[in-house]
Amino acid sequence: MKTNRLYSYRLLIAIVLVVACAHQASAQQPDKTGSLTITVTDADIKLPVIGSLASLTSRNGGSPILIKSDEHGVVSFKSVPRGLYRLKVSLKGYFPEFIDSLMIHADSVVSKSLQMYPYNGVTEYDAYEDLAKGIVRLFRSEWLLGPGVYVSAKYGFRIELKCCDSTFKFDRYNNVVYEYLDSLNGPGWYEKYMRDLWLEKAKSDSVSRRPENRELRGK
Image (cartoon, rainbow, N blue to C red; front, side, top):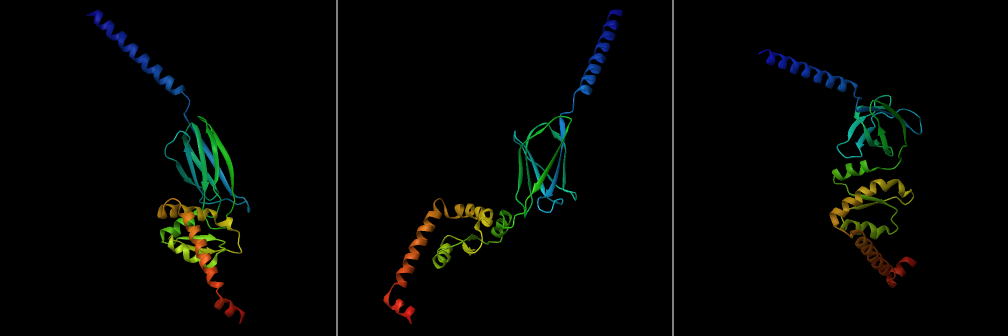
């Protein structure tokens, strides 16, 4: 009987010691998360950018963590699992900014400053809004004025002529529309469009060279 009591007593002591050691090891284990603070400012006027969307994505995959900048242009990511991340900050009217390799260490705070540059042209956000409304257009310096307008309708869009403006301002908008037109018209549609464009121009030139039309222009 005494033997059983002694065995039970020793077993109880052993269990208590194991639990105590496990608790102590857990308490001594460093935190596996860190924090990240981003301060976003306008590159031109040097003021905070309010409402910019910061997207933090692990390079190992998974869903991004999304947070908007506050009234001071600050974005705070707390309790972020340690690892390598990619950061994207975006806002309508600005070029998006990226940090491709951002290391978050355990039990540490990383602080970064980002400047966002205003974008004076139309953006992909404008394109998505237009497409949602059924507005399909491309901004181009179309040199084939008449034929370009007529032929584009065949492929489901209209031309917005920007003859005296820099077309690079519309690249981000146009790229979204080009992707939509790829899905609408299928592969190789742009080459077909350009071929039809030149055929239409040839017809137009042929009509303008007719004698009766030359006489009318001479009067």
